[in-house]
Each structure stands twice: as C-alpha cells, then as structure tokens.
Length: 79
Image (cartoon, rainbow, N blue to C red; front, side, top):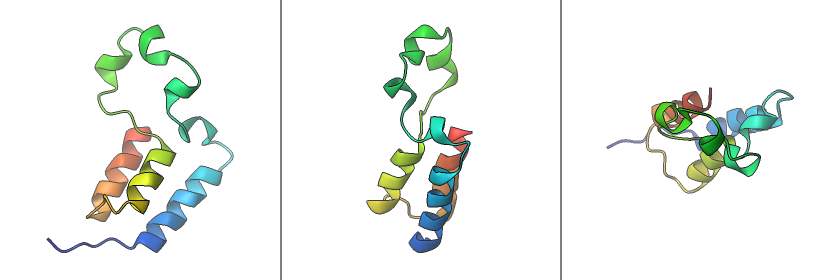
C-alpha cells in the first residue's frame, strides 16, 4: 500500500495545533487533569477511542500513519 504521508507538513499542522492558545486542554490525556472517565456519567460509553495531540505526535514520529486520512481521523477524534 502506497503511503501518501508528508510527515513534514503533518508535523507543521500538528505543531500549529499544539501551540494554539485554545488547544491546551487537548495536548495531554484528559485523565492527567481529572478522573473524568469515572466522574462523568456515560463518558466511557461516548468516548470510544480517547485521543490527544501528544498521542498524535507520537504516532506520527513512530511512523504509525500510513495515510494522511488516518492522521486526520485521529485529529477529528479530539474535536
């Protein structure tokens, strides 16, 4: 399967998101700040695949994305 990944461009997008003034709550996993998964009724039922920006960054650095759409699918999980 041919990869369409432009790691440099995706990293540029990711760095923009990480450094944006309104994305601070999405950089680290929510459990780092609170026990939200246990405190909010239905959280685990609604949030099937937790995602945060530093996890996306790690996956990009580790070469886990084979297609750009996979990268953007993870970004969409955050918002």
